[in-house]
Image (cartoon, rainbow, N blue to C red; front, side, top):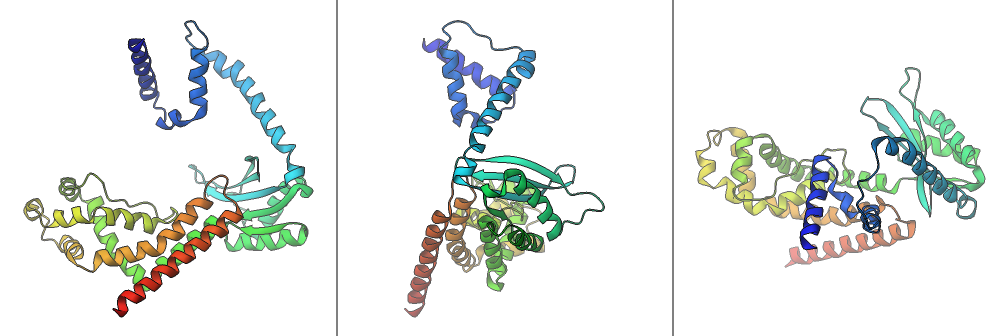
Length: 335
């Protein structure tokens, strides 16, 4: 029995690796349900054919999804819905606007609008017309609010729609608001200086292969340099930097570093001085302590199931945390 189970596990792993499937599949309930269904057959089973999958069973699953969607739609008059609108750029560089419908029983895709045409001007009135059509499609009596980001054209759109549909409210996206708040903190002169110095270090170790090679002798973690469009990217960079700071200190004083042919170049010397400056790490930790409570709220809002009540509660906790740390910092300075 154990030999058969080990063989089955080996075949499963090979299927995942050779098919380049995500390991996250193993965390999904549908994966476990599939394996349990296989084990209940009680006889040898080699699966379905390619043609059956792409025709017969795909059509069957499409009907199943449609049935689930209709069940959710039937609940819209009872619970109300939120219209979600979000702009993005696809791999073909087309400007698109996604429109989704969300209620307490789930969020579903409604439509995508291509706004990349030469004559298309994505201003408030144009967006208002597009979202207005979606509201009418869903039925205005079912719609409670419209949620978009805080761009000026979306603000204009919100005012237009509130005038056209007095029963609705426009709400700016909480995730976008918090991300803008984190960005505003990052624009403070002293925070910008801390981030600038941190970027000198990160840039060197992400761009220079020899620097990374030396650093890998002292740390199993790598430095992160995520895109500036990612929520809370400053905090992500600084937290990883703080975690590997001891390894950075060991790196810049090692014999490998001294023997490195580029060790006397101005940019390398500057990074070494930043790492050895006793004020660098404490300043990084201060920025982290300010941003982390807000980032925790941001992560809460950016997932399925978050509610306005939870947002207010966690924002209160974040405020209390910041006020407590400010008092403790003041007491420390007085001493």
